[in-house]
Structures are given as C-alpha cells and as structure tokens.
Length: 517
Image 1 (cartoon, rainbow, N blue to C red):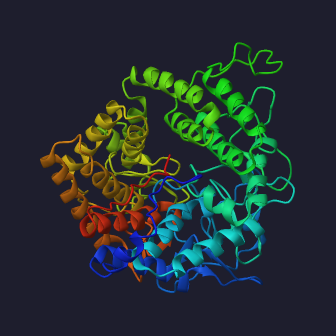
Image 2: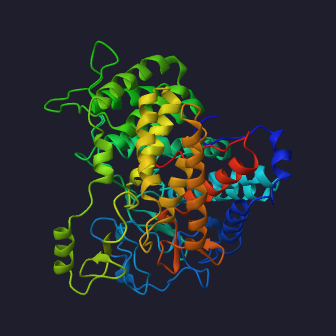
Image 3: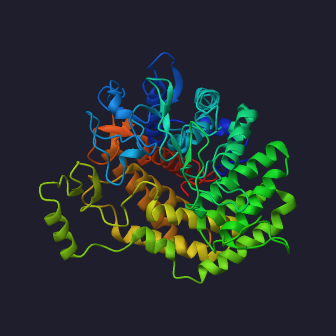
C-alpha cells in the first residue's frame, strides 16, 4: 500500500468485523467520538461549509470557542499567529500559542483520526466513515494549498480558517510523518504531486546541497537556511518516495539521495551529489525519524531499496553504539525538590493545578505529571519513542530496538497512571495503550509479560475514558473544558479501536499508532 503503514484488512474480513461491532465499550467510545465530529465538529462557519474537522471546540456548545477576533489578533511578524487570550481557552501544558488552530482545521493533527475512520468502516460495515474521510481529504486538497508556493495550510504553525476562508498563519513546517499519502493520490494525484514538488522547490533554500530551514513561506516563495533538521529531511524523503510511485519521475529519487548525503554524510556514489558546496559540510546525523522514513521510502523505490536500506543499517549501528540519546532527550530526569521550590519562587501566584506559567498565563510545564507521561508539542514523549522503536524493530527485525521499546514500556507498568492528571494529554494515554497492545502481540516477549502489558492497556483505557470523555469527545487535557486536536485525541481513538480488535478479534489485531515520528 503506497504511503500508509496502518493496518488495512482484506475485503473478506469486513463482514466478520461487522458482526462484533457492538461487543466492546472501546469501539462504542471511539465510534461516538467520530460520530460527534461528523455531526457537530465540521466546518459550518463562513461562506463555505466543508467536511473538515475543527481543531478546537467548546465542549458545552460543540462550536468554535471564539470567532469574532479583532484584526490585531492576526498581526504577526514571523508568520505565527499567537492563539492565546481573546477569550480562548488556555493552552494545555506544552502547547505554544503559535502552534494552535483556534479558528479551523489542521489536517496533520487529524491524520490518525482519518486513518481510524477508514478502519471504523471495516469494523462496523458502515461506509459513511470512509466517505466522510474521503470528502475531507478532497476538500482539503482543492482548497487549502497555496497557489503561489504549493505548500499546504497545515503543519506546526498553520491551519485553515473556517470563518475567513483563508490560511491561518504564514509559515509552513511539516508536523509529522503523514500516513495517508495513498489516499491523497487516489483522490487527486495532481494536487498531491504539487505538494511533493513544493517540499523541494518552496521548502529547500539551497538546492545545490539540500540546506534548508524547517520553516518556509506559505503565501509567497520564502525558503530559509540553517535549520535543516534531519527529522524534517525524513519527512521530505517520505513525500518524495510517494511522489515517485505516483509519477515514476526519477527526479524524486535524486532529491532523496541529495538529502541522504546532506544530512548523514553517506555517499551513494563515488562522486558527491552536492553541487558547489563551498564551506558547506554534510551533517553526520543518525536521527531515528530520518532512518525510519528512509527505510519506508526504500520500500516504495525497488531499484534503490538495497542501497538505501544499507545506509539505514549503517546508521542504526552508529546510533545503537550511543547510550540511547533519544531517550535522554525525551524523558530527561525528575526535578529535584530544590528545582521545584525555585519554580514556585520564580512564578509566585502563577500555579494552577501545579502548572508553571509565564507572566502571560501560558502554561509551559507541569509540576504534577512526571517526565514519563509529560507531553510537549513536537515531542511525542517516551511512549512515542517506544512506539518508534517498535515500528523500527518490525521493519528491520533487529531485536535491539524491541528491547529498547520493552525497557520504556516496563517503566510505564512500574509507574502506573499518574495520581494527578490535570496536565495529562489524551495522546499520552493513547500512545501507552497502543504501545502495550503492540508489545502484547510480540512472540519474542515472554507470555506472562505480554499478559501484563495487555492488562495495563485495559487499565489505562478505562481510566482515559473516565478522565477525558465529555459530550461525545475528549478533553484537551485532564482539566480542560474544551477539545483541542493538538493534544492527540486521534491517538486515543485509534488505541481504543486497537484494544477492541485485540479483545474481540484476537486473530485480526489492528496495528499500533505509527505516525508520531
């Protein structure tokens, strides 16, 4: 399947799934969430209504919290509109105001939800979920792409404004590995190819050496330099590989190989692919997301598969020789009592539910949720890293990655759910459920341990339903009275479907969350 790594069941399986559609409360909760979004959470604002989902909703009215912003709200010097104040609900801990989508839709925050909708049609036998997901993607392709740059109004800092029928923000940055390119190409290959081309033409500032900034202008051509994150190079490589399958144009292969040399320093040919590099020196990155995206890209380009996967294997060995740098960056260490006291001295009166806030009231970190469960925007946390390790193990069959995933999972089982949940995101619990179920299905793990993982998945799922469920949707965090897609409700929806499949259809397990790279 081009572009997707979520499990897709064969047609004969549909009728079997439909017979068990009402057997599980987990299926019912997930289905209610999707039904509520379809019925109440779509674009019913402005002059053009659409099937796009709102990224922020008041949970009492199931409407956008605020629509009548003054023009000063939209003024920005860096292309990022600061979504805070003006009667908006406070951002959850770890969310930057410039990353929110208070007036409309951000496709990248709905990617796992759309994947869940395709699976939900198979689980229930009802085609309406697939039909709505297709309509959503079609409208997005036809309306939410810059005519000047080809870049989409989605990602880290951009969204689509339902009220004003225009892009919200003016700085494009890919958020995560997109799992539904196959769907986009089946709906509108021309516009989807235009996005892939934009990720080279409009995103890469120096095409001679593939130097770039993760930020690029949306409204007009404005690529940058000097912030060429290897992770983002992986996202572009994944997009180019899908474009190659759709077009068979070798230019996409060449772009991938320039990125490989530029970000890793690995040459695929005796001569360098970099043109007039001058003082530019290739990075020596072993970034996990880059490695995983390149591995998946190789699957789509048979003529280069062996060469690219040899590079990944070499990078894997270099990364495995390091003492888990990804884990150190993700989990960090607990605060000492002295550091905690300093937080409270530095921010007197700014604590709410144990949150440390800036003077402007934006909650930046939590004093109640420990490092293992804490999420931050652009960081999928320890559970996200463990899911990456699980994914990479299943691709490469290198059990050293499975052992790393196990070690993180065991920390969750030992620590259990946080006792204070005000700052907990649905993404955090959804990823933990998905991780536990993935490892529970691994034959290389002892049966008793696998059973423990499954039991903990059920425990976290039941607690999540109690904590987050409100008016058919999920709260943005454990204290919020609004829904906000940015905190990963889609991961929890997928995890509940995964749990339903595990318990009701053990021979037909659903794949784990495989997009938060």
